[in-house]
Structure formats: C-alpha cells, structure tokens
Image (cartoon, rainbow, N blue to C red; front, side):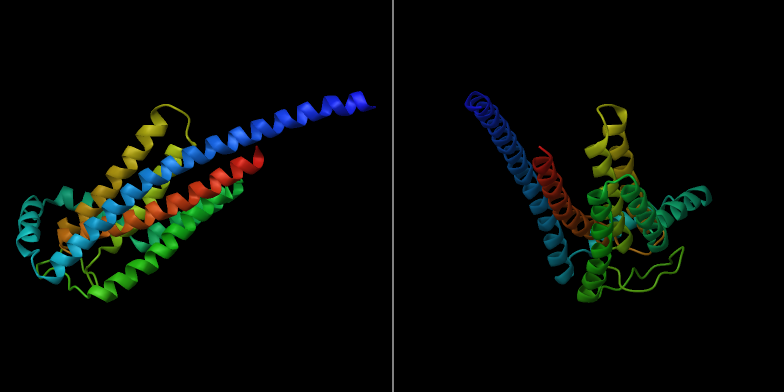
Length: 242
C-alpha cells in the first residue's frame, strides 16, 4: 500500500511541474503580446489626439482639400457604382446584420469568447462613435455630395465601424486559421476592405479625409483594447484546460 502511494507522489509532482511550466510559458507569451499591443494602442491614440488637436485649431483645411480634389477628380459612373457598394459594406444595417450572423455562427461552433469579442467590440464601438461625434460636432464637407448623409462628420462612423468589425474578423482569421494562405491572406483582404470603405466616403463627398483617419484611429484603439481582453480570456482558458 505504501509502495503504491510512493509511486503516486512522483507522478503528482511531475504533473505539477508540467502545469507550472505551461502556466509560466503562457504568461511569458501573454506579457510579450500585451507589450506589443500596448505600443499599437499608443500609436492609434496618438494619431487620434493629433487629428483632434488639428481639428480644434482649424488646421486641417489644406490637408483635407488636397486629398478631396485628387480623389473626386477621378469620378466616373463605374467607379461610383463600386464606391457605393464599398460604402454599403460599412453601413450600420450591413455591419449590424453581419455582427449578429457572425456571433450566432461562432456561438454555434462553441467559440463563445470569439462571439462576445465580435459583439462587444462592435456594439460598444458604435456607441463610442456617437459620443465622439456629439463631442466634436464637426459639420460635413460643404461640397456637392453624390449621396445625402445626416449627422456630424468626425470621426467617420463608416471608417470607425469598419475598422472595428472587419478588423476583428481579420484578427479572428489570423488567430484561428492554420498556417497558410488563409492565415495571412484573409486578414490582408479585410484590411484592404477597411481602406476602401474609408476612401468611398471621401469619394462620395460625405466626409473629410481627416474624418476617415480619425475614425480609423479611434476604431483601431478600441479594437486593440478588445483584442487584449479577448486574448486574456483565451489564455486563461488554455491554462484551465491544461
């Protein structure tokens, strides 16, 4: 009987050593990741603060006008159709429907943490955009727009919402996909989609370029915070699972 117990003790100690090593390794990776994410978060926040300061001091007119003239100097019927499609992909109805559908799919696949990541990041992000618009109260461009939009201009809701939702999708693809084309090619395609949604808003005459940059920066900052929290939950789950 004593011999059996003696055999069990080393086995228990070995298991504890393995668990301690795994926890230590996961914590090391987590802290390295948080450090990198912290740098990215700082850059997004810095960009937003700089744009906001320039806006407060009315120093964006030359910057905005040069880009608007260049982009709207290439207006054509075929390009307008493309830009209308791109701007639709960043609209509230489309993004909201996509968020709900993707959340349902992820929960069905038993990836509830990823589902919460998508829902909370986009839902809270949209409220944050409303708050920022009411804070800055910037009027839309005083030019001939190709479509009619209501509400304030800075930061762009399409740009911010697209950065958060499509950026979150891009991250989940990178996080879950195996090595290969999907892991890297998928995120690149979604990042290009984000860029073109922003360009479409300038092309259609409903936003200043600085609105788009501000939307990308604010959305990127919030998305980075959500990614940090999502990874914390994922790592904690991995540690519990052993």
